[in-house]
Image 1 (cartoon, rainbow, N blue to C red):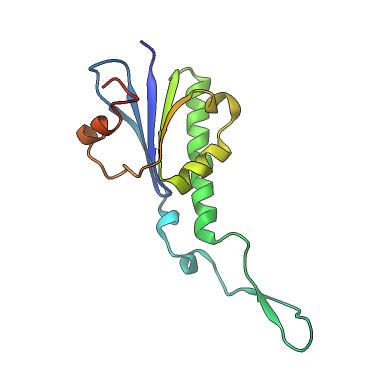
Image 2: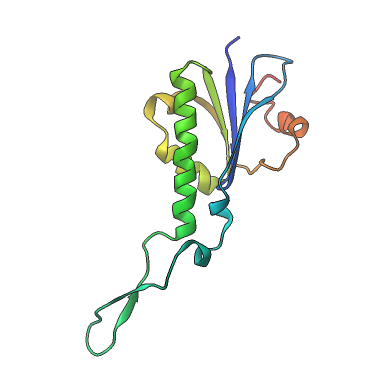
Length: 146
């Protein structure tokens, strides 16, 4: 039976498990932490918004198109995608299951390279990062032979 990797992630924590077949359970392979995603937007920027010329007599302030917190989540998604790419490139797994909240799942899907994305067999749009391993296996039993 081929190796399956299960990524359980949110914007600040990712746990990578492997399952090598029926009745083998889940084995934690790696844990990635991105504390910047947990900070408030105000803590992630160094100063106030920039000024811009306004129409008429008043001025305005320029807001970034992407909030700093969203930017940090995307940076973390790219870090995870790189980890999954490395695993695929070294044949560490043949199947991939993604588990993440809907907003972060969208970010992950957007940054995965095509060959890695083709190995994704199941997606669960849930945040199971704080779920104990034994309970996690039960939630994923429809996709993984634990």
